[in-house]
Length: 43
Image 1 (cartoon, rainbow, N blue to C red):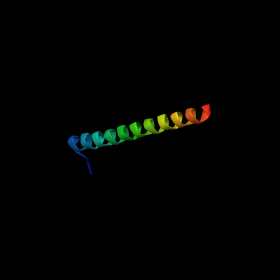
Image 2: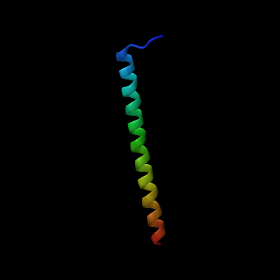
Image 3: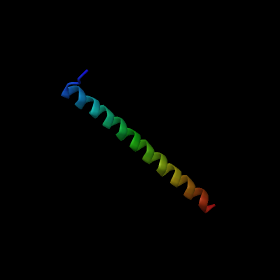
Image 4: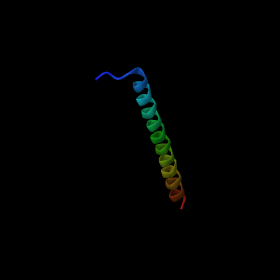
């Protein structure tokens, strides 16, 4: 069950896109948490 190079490249590309979107979401979540924490900290 050998994958062709094209299929492998396509899979890697899709995987990288998914990882990238997860990283972006994680960064927004962290920034949100920091922002909320610092806001509550001041009061």
